[in-house]
Length: 196
Image (cartoon, rainbow, N blue to C red; front, top):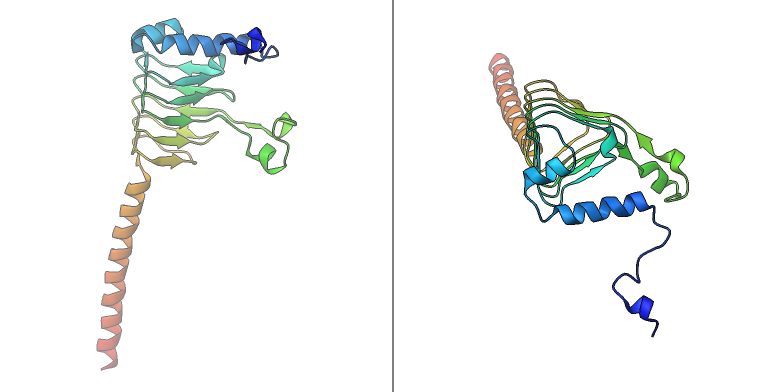
C-alpha cells in the first residue's frame, strides 16, 4: 500500500485554495477556546462572543456591531453583504443567508455556472433576539428590537419592535378565524331574526 495515501493527510486535495484550507483549520482550532477568545481571534468587535461550531462565510463582508452574541452552530453568510447591529443575539443553529444558489441547482448547473447565484445584502438591526434554530433569507432587513421565535423562517422584511414566529403567526390566525366565525354567527342570527 502507498504510504502517502495511507497517512492521515493522504486524502487532502492538493487543488484546494490555501486560504480556504487556512479558514477551515482556523475554525477547527478555535473550537477549543472560549467564546470571547474565539471572537477576539476572528477580529470581531468589542464585546462580541461566538460559540463553538458557528461559521462565518466571507467575513470581510460582515459588518458586526458591538456586544453581538452568536450561538452554537449558527451560520452567518456574508457573501452578499451582512450587517448586524449592536447588542443582537443570534441563537444556536440560526442560519442567516445573503446569497442563494437555488437557480443554479434548478438549472442543473451546480458547480458550473456562478452567474445563477444571487447575492443580496441582509441586515439585522440592534437589540434583536433571533432564537434558533431558524433561518433568514437573502436580502431581508430586520429592524431594531425584534424578537424572533425558534423554528421561524423569515423571508420578508420585519419592522422595528416586531415579534415574529411561525407558531405565533398560526396562533394569531386561529384567533382571527375564531373572531370571524363569531361575527358570521351573529350576522347569520340577525338575518334569521329579520326573516321571522
